[in-house]
Image 1 (cartoon, rainbow, N blue to C red):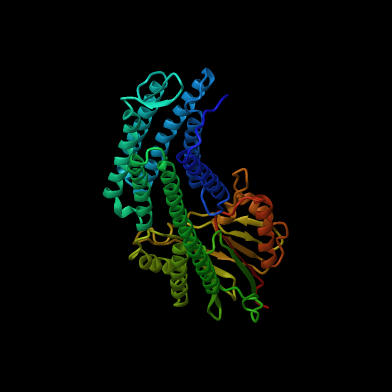
Image 2 (cartoon, rainbow, N blue to C red):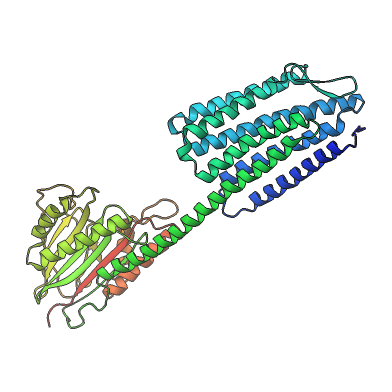
Length: 487
């Protein structure tokens, strides 16, 4: 293959522009490939953008090198590289328009605008295919020298339409562009136009190459800089949120009794409780407290939802339940009054399932109320844990005017009572199977006569063995009381 490149000051400047452009594009591609703070979508777009510019520049260079070289082989290749040069110019304009459309956030018109751009690009490609087999936009004479034909404007009409579309978006949706990005987009639009004007005076020098590459690099640098700034701001925000969530976790944990043994001076019973939130803060809670010297209040509850809203609702519900029970109200009465209070202004429409009881320490007699909560597990001395099932009342804060049914029970010396939230029975393994009550009872009965702390440890071990490496989706909260009786 013989090249017929004419050495002249203008051609040397052109070669310099093209080589610098190729080098800049290659460096930009490497920078994008190794950009650690760029999303996959951003990388894919800008890689395609600079690869298209590179295709355009390289084919332009090859056309210049082969222009005027004799031979049939040269004629085939110069036609091919010219075709790819013109197609690449259309794709560059289309990619920029798609970026402008994305940043403009046109919302309801986005699909219509995108369809318009796809259609314009398709027309451009069709025009260039026709030009490949005719003299519609350009032609090569017998010596393989490039010439523009009378229909040359058709090779740029689609690009011009996309350019006008970009200007429309920048003006119509200017409030959606930051000042720096809006300026970068205008530079990318205006620079080639200025270069074409200059080139009309100095026709032998391809200023359009330099203008296209430099404005593209500037635009990309501004957009990526904006992305990196927003990434760093998001990281700082995430760090601040994480710190605040850790503080919320500490505050929430401090609201629940967690010093054990809880009542070291009381030999009539022993109890232990734990909560493992699925997120930094959870919606489950437990509570236990002396109502008076001969009565202990027990609470196990689960707020709908997760995260901070559920945790705030949980703290309010816990205080209200404790207050009403310590005022001497029975579990059913306490839940009725709490329900009325929580229903007021409950715009988040949260609710809470509650199991609560008051146990008379001297006799082991207790009264419990279950508002849509899990069934407790009871163990009689000398036997294993079994579920105690009965009909629930509705959850607290679902509607006003609810009466909550009460259930009487008795604990004898050596008996144990285990209450929990649905995070226990609904613990899920990698096969999407639930732990269920049967496996929970099996874990509790590993050593049913153990202390409450060991009972909870056995239950958690059973959960972890079943779940394995699967993610925890719900809070796991448990409480166990063992009644020793008076001596």
